[in-house]
Image (tube, rainbow, N blue to C red; front, side, top):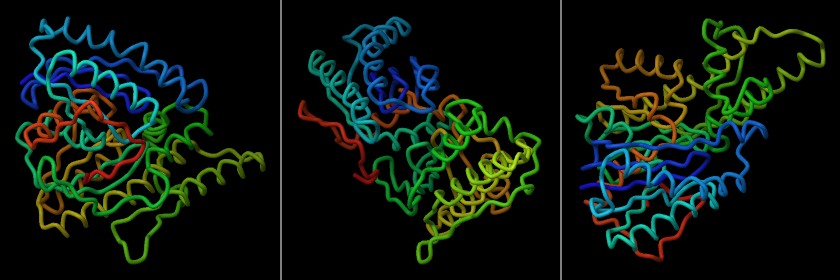
Length: 335
């Protein structure tokens, strides 16, 4: 089964063709990062317009790269939620038009479910059930993946996402956007214990997280040093900040594994590329005897392959949509 998959939830336009859920025939991506870096963050209106310019070109390119024709496409999968509403609408409307023109099923895919499915591409042997730590710029949640299409949120951030914190602090440091990768590189070799940052706890909800206090503490430290004319050790700062985020994520992910009784943990989303978090997870899972699965780095960010992979399992579960499919800025992963 060849699925044409479309992703346009933020600032990457992606079109992939995935066969039978786990074989990626092509994954064409047009990034807008350089454009939005000028503004220090994604400008929704610009993102939507750039999706419109790129999406049909990428679809033609995908067919050309695979040598397939329109008749070889058996279904169309698309991110319908969550994301920047204008950006998501571009993908949804294009997918509806393609599915209608080709007379094939239309498959709506939750963006975060797609990130989880990126692990199936990297690790063909991985099957549910397992716990997945989903960490990105838009959200941070711990998910009980009971089956390919049945999922339950065990815990999540009460305010900012972990990726958003990296982006905001990176912006103040003027080291590049998105901030995750530059912060990761900056912290290499730094002392993670040099600067003290808070690790928040939510009473009565031990798997929930909060990052707003951490972000505020980091920004205050930077601003206070600037006002006093003091010079911070930036590698130590970045390492300490990254360690604080990892210390909020990893123990809760491990606690979720113990709570469910599973023996398998996965990580997904853009922040899954962070070297400190990956190393801490590997260490903790090794100590606990838990199997750890992580997507290869190129599949951590937004891409069409992950949507095609999850779309296959949504199709098998009978989750298809008609021409009345709408886009949503927010949507629970369990729906």
